[in-house]
Image 1 (cartoon, rainbow, N blue to C red):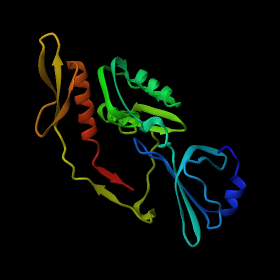
Image 2 (cartoon, rainbow, N blue to C red):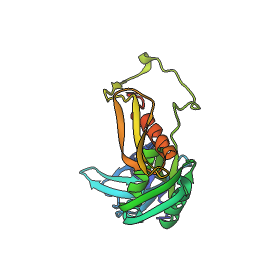
Image 3 (cartoon, rainbow, N blue to C red):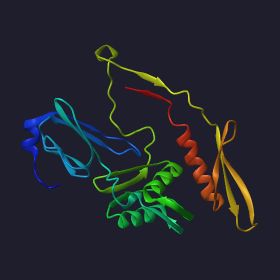
Image 4 (cartoon, rainbow, N blue to C red):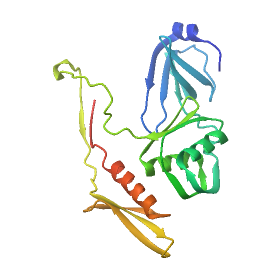
Length: 244
């Protein structure tokens, strides 16, 4: 809460674990301190610095006392704010980044967006801003997160092409795991849209072949339907092997 407690924390700290999530999940920090340390309140704000490097703002969610320690868990997203309030409204011919900017302003947040997409019609029916952003991120195959009081809504980086590469000899590893996910792989996707010129419901596919994933929503035009079908294809067929 804008009070420097670095020295007090250092004198009582057992461990600090910081998880940096990619995607919709909020970042999380876990502080373990001595049992007699004063318990912070729910929704208290913590700014994390490690060796002088700033790691962002976290909001206290839970505190747990054991015989020997106090465990403080905090997330980078303040789920107590207005993002969870349900709203009913609609948007016409609005660009994705204009929508993100509007939601950010309404919730006293900053924003970062690089998605080039226009919604011809978008309905928010008894739905929170948080749920709406989560839904749109899935539709557009975008990376959505909230960090440091900023809504981040950006393109998902394919294959992490620009990251540095390192080689680790398996003999140097204390432990390792390779997980194969046997999820169903789709060869194509199909979306339905309304052709206003012919006043007909039509459909368009991205690629061909079975199994095919069919989107349940009806989109405003062919271009929007195709773009969403392409995004869903990429989302559904992300790599099914993870390693640690």
